[in-house]
Structure formats: structure tokens, C-alpha cells
Image (cartoon, rainbow, N blue to C red):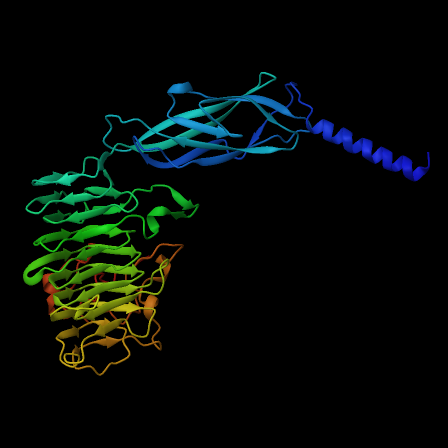
Length: 474
């Protein structure tokens, strides 16, 4: 045989032998599996609700194939389930892994309800039993909490929800006309995708600085390693106050991650529609606070990062005091801070007035206070901004008094009004930077709001505009 042909034949033979070795399986005890993690920790879950899957990799770093079974330590009673190579359950048998190969192991959990009122831990392990008899383990651990699941719930009489356990809302929570839903301090409402708190009656949600009422989406896991779903917008519907709903009181509430924040339907401005105090509306896909033809009182509150408009007021009467209204949405377009108008969807709505005192109105645009009035009332529309920091092009409007205007020549401008150290990752914090021109410009009304949204005491004179009083940090 010629040398060239001999070399080709040897190469082909070696190739065949190599392929053969890859699928040669050994029961020799010297060979073991490797794993991308010895312990798999899962995100906090609610009892009775299946978690999203997490994964780790199983490696065969040997030059021979290995056969093995995978068995959940707790057996069929384990709340954990695994899936490998298309097979799922608490036991998977006759798995094969060629030399140098790997496969994914997906793990999910569904913890049954228990008598616990707080967080509790659940553990198990996956036992990898090799054909040689060797046994290897990957530990599984998860934190869980009990919850009350409400599916399409209708509140038809006065009802109180308590902070003992969180509530998971599916298919919306409806408060019938004539009924009052009261949320006690520390109550937590977790809404499934698209679910809404729909109020035709009355909502009273009065938390405290130490027991804030939370309304958010029900995803407790992460979209990415450093991005929990809780930081995303559009995770649930929002809070809707129907036309016949009056006297709603929200204090020390945190509403975030929704399609819309609070939507107040037309009701007339004779009676107070909504009092919003010391609360947060943040990371909203559409409008943060949208009100049509109704009366609002908003104080000491943060309304920020809406993909639509942070505060959208059509008609009615509204007053804002010590509010931070800032449009720096991370996810949903380039929304603006404030829109004032006398119409909604082409229908005229009587505009009775809007006032902003001791506020911050800022964002990415050169004007963050936008007005859309009919020609007949444009020059006389009764709105005012006073003792505030304002991002606007027209600084000559007589409706502005004692206003400090945003200027890109200032060291603190736009987002730089807020502490640089806190703008890390995907989190937004709106505490004031030491150089912010909002400092010291508020008027004597600060005596009515001695505590800011972070619990810091405002001075009786010369307080800062916005919902946060500047506080030095180490």
C-alpha cells in the first residue's frame, strides 16, 4: 500500500476508534461526574404556586461514557422536580452521558401550604447514582412563604386585608360600589400578569413608615442574574378608581411595575376622589398617575419612571405638594413628567386648576411640564408652579413663582439631581444629591410635612423641594 493511502487508512481507523471510545460506557469506580454547582439556590416562592425552572449542568469530563440514575432525595413526596434529557419527575433512570459531554438539569419546586406565617426554608438533593455504585449529590434549597390566593375575587361588603400573609391576585380584585376595601399597614398584594385592583367602591390603604403597603407583580424570580422581574414595568395591571368611586385614601403605599399606576376615572371635582400621601408610583409601562375630571390631593410622594406620562391630568382640580415627579424610564420609551390638558380622547373636560408647590418636575426632555389646552383657555388656564425645581423651556410664564429652573450648565441637572452612588444597575433612587438646586427652595408649607418619604425630618424653614430632604451619607 502506498504511504499516502496508508496514512489515510490509519487516520480513518483512529477516527472510528475515537468515536467508539466516546460511546464506550464504563462502570469503573474511578470515574465520576462533575457539576456546575454543588448547591442550587432558588428564588423565594409562594406556597401552592409552581416556580420557574432553574438549571445547572452535569458534565462527564472523562474519556469514557457514564450511565447513571438521578433520584430526588425526598422521593415522590419531594416538592422539587427535575427534568433531564427530556425526562421529568422525581426519578429519572438510565441516563447516558458520552465522554466529554454535558447536559442540563432543570429544577422547579411547588411547596405545599404550611402553618408558617413568615419565610421558611425547604431543602432536598438530587442523588446521581452511577453504574459503578458511586453516589454524588447536588443540594437544592429554596425560601418559601404562605400566601392567600384570590381568583376573580369580588369585594361586595366592607372588607379588611391584613399583613399576616401576602395575597396573590389572579383575574383582578373588584371592589363593588358601596363597599370599602381596607388594607392594613404592611399588607402585600402580588398581582398576576394583567390583574387589576378595580375599585367602584372605596379603597383605604393607610400604611406607616415602618409598615408600607405594597402592590406589585407576583414574579419573585429573576429575568437575568442581576435583574429581578420586580424591577421591570408591565408585570401587572394597576389600580383603577371608577367614576363612582370617591374618598380613596392611599398613604405610605408602594405601587410599582404595573401597566399603569393609578387611573382615576371622571367623577367631577365636587368631592375628593383621591388623597395620595407619602407614597411611591414607580417603573410604570404607561401613565403613572392618570386623572380625568376629578379632584386629587397628592403630597410627599414620588411618581417616577413612567413610559407614558408620570402625572397626566385632564381637567378637574389637583394639588401637589412636596412631590418628586421625574421621567427617567429605563424600559418604556421617553415618557415625560407632567401633562396638563382640558380633554381626554377628544372629549372636553373642564379644567378647574392644578398647583405644584415645593415639587421637583424633571426628566430627559428640555420641557417636562407639557400643556394642551383649547385655544380659548390656553392663556388663562389656572395652573401654577411655586417654590419648585422645574425643567421647562419657557421660563417667563407668570404662573411660575419662586421657581428654580433646570439648567444644563449646573453640575446637578436632570438625573444628576439625585445621588450618583445609588444609580447602580437597574435600580433608581431619587434621594437628592448634595449639589441639587432643589435644596433649600421650599416654602413654609414644610411645617405641614415635617417628615419626608424616607423618614428624614424637614427643617421648619428652608426645606428642600421634592419628597426627599437631603441627608448626608458616609
